[in-house]
Each structure stands twice: as C-alpha cells, then as structure tokens.
Image: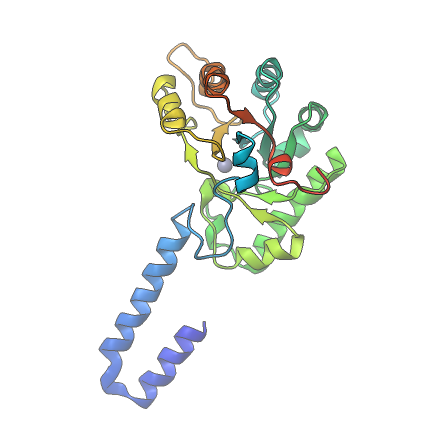
Length: 256
Ligand SMILES: [Zn+2]
C-alpha cells in the first residue's frame, strides 16, 4: 500500500521516471508472490520449519497430519501411532472438526495435539483480506477449543500458502506459524514407496514431517496413502533412534 502510494507520488512529481517506478512496483509484486508461494520462507513472519535445538538433542522429530479429522482414516492413524508409542500434532480443518467432534476428542485423548489448519481450507486463503483471514483462524480456534478444551497454539495455512496479512492475525490469537522440514506429497501421490523415500531420505532429529489423514489419495488397491506409508515410516524412526512427539511437547509449551 505504502509502496504503491510512494510510487504514485513519485510518478506525479517526476513523470520521466515512470519506467523505473513501474519496474520497482512489478519487482515488489514478484517478491511478495514468491514469498506467498514459498511455504518454508520467513519473509512473511516467523515460520517454524524445524523443532528447537533442545528437541533435536533429545532425538525428537514431529509427525504432523493435515486436513483431518477423517472418521475412517484418523482412528487407524491413531492406532498405528499407539502401537509405536509415537505422538503427533494434527492440523485439523475447523469445519471437519465440527462435523466429527468425536474423532477430534479421540486425537486429544490419545495424547496428541490438535492444531489449526483454518476453518474451511479455502484454496484462495493467501488472497483473503484481513477480516476473512481472521474469521478463518478464529473460528477454527473456537471450534477446536470447544471440543478438546485446549486452544490450538499452532497454525498451518492451506497448502502452506500464506499472505503478508496473516502474521498479525496469528499474533492476535497467540498462535505460531508452522510449516515443515519435509513432506512426501502423500495427498497427491499414489506410490507409497516414493512418498516414504521423500520422508525418510536424510531424515534427522528436529525434522517436522507432513502427512495427511484427511486426503483422498489411495494406492492402486484402494488403501489411503497415509496408512500405507505410516508403518514403514514408524519402523524407520525406531531404527534411527528417533522419537515422534507433538509440537507442544517438542517446544516445551507451558500448557502442553
Ligand atoms: Zn491442507
């Protein structure tokens, strides 16, 4: 806004400079677009892409699950995590949480944290104005807190695309932005081996991994990709001496 105003004023005052001004404005738009489309970037505000050093020193990693809850898939994910005594953070969509509150309660009851992945998961989220952004974040906070009794402390934008306006909204809700260290594209790929390879190749303590318990991707035989990948991934964690914990545990949040 200020940038545009400065451009307009300069244009009026010094018309012969217009090619330079137009170039500067276009460059500015390119930079903002690049920042929006770079999920792990920090230009638009703080962004947790790895666990704190202390968590890495404890050999911790964090499995995160997006786009749920799903009444069919999420309970099976919870059973697998229990089998390996692994904890995770679930970035739930507010509207789905409202539709399946029992599944959300079960996530929390098993010792995992339920975090905020917006209310409606709009794909145009990064282009929302301030009041719509606030509504997306705050209504999911309220729905999840109403179900679990704990207000989410972390937020992840739909598809990881965030707007320059998001950071003040999150600060107002006392919520931290989280992206990831590595993702396997389990929401779109149908070959579980390739998904697994992307997740475990170079995996080290402190990494934050993204999977999806609410995605529709299936193997050729109709198994949700996340369920096809998770046992081998959890085996790999055991073999590497790594332990999955929830974000509040890894970050030592007082209310964890
Ligand atoms: Zn998502």
